[in-house]
Amino acid sequence: METNLQNDGTETRRIGIAGMTCEKCVRRVEKALRGVDGVRDVQVDLNSAVATVRFETARTNIASLHEALLQSGYRPSAEMPV
Image (tube, rainbow, N blue to C red; front, side, top):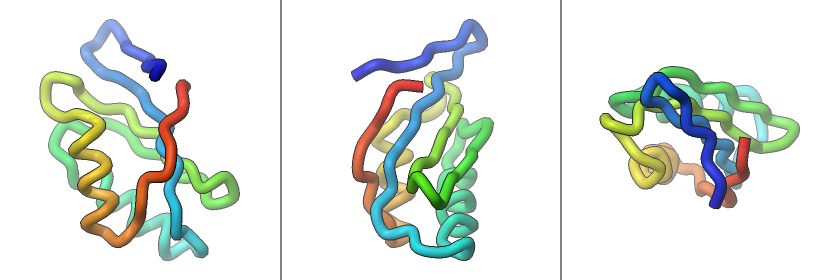
């Protein structure tokens, strides 16, 4: 699995998300991911069903992002390099 590590201690990941069907879903996914401590930026694209997330590696990890998605009712479906 490829990652995009930055010099500022952050990492950017693209996460496929199953179950998004509307703009309300996009807002719920954004809110869930932004609620994870250490997340710096979130961009969610409904058409591709992908969230691009930049987070501090010292404060959170991909498992925490997946858990936040699951808790909000969406299933992470794949991770892709950025």
